[in-house]
Length: 298
Image (tube, rainbow, N blue to C red; front, top):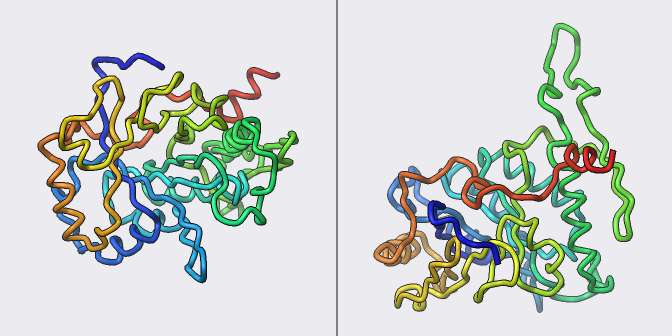
């Protein structure tokens, strides 16, 4: 496990399901009081796969619905990679990053959930799948170079096509060609989080952090706790931060704010030092962009 820099600011995040988040955001007051969530750095919004006539809730779409209304709060979508595609995830995550002004991130679920008959859920569970998924996101991320969105109307020119990059990826699991149909993201690199699941072993050192109840063997550690454990001092100072699971019974904004304020005595954050971009919370990440990958293999 990577050693914690004593000068690094520790983080505090909350984890909610996508359905729960949708109900909370529907109850979100306007305008939001600046102090309501000032101790919270980011929200993890979890995909919900419906069973027995319940609806699916897609975390990245729910996060996008609140991006403009939740200021200075990171929005991390916990996504089942096996039910999606790296091209679609890269496009959605880029859009979320633009909508939120650089506060988007992704947490990869360990393995498929729900029925195993959709997307890539029936593929062989292999660590190389997640590694290649991340590789493709890196190639697609910011496939529009700076200045690509020309908007030179006098020349009847919207895009400078020489500044668009093709991913041209062909691997064991995916064949992808770029560019994304999405303008340049705010963050230079995608913020990708993983867990201590065996399928994430090959990407832990590249990811922004590893979310786990216990210290992982590799990578920067975000400690996952419930509220009771956090309140009784179970936060480990060896972690770069804590992620607290919000009880499923909390579905209205007032109760949510009271829950957050109840965490304040043990909170490890300093609201005045909260960065503008999500990636700055976790320090430099080694998930390579397309240009860096080309430099290594050129």
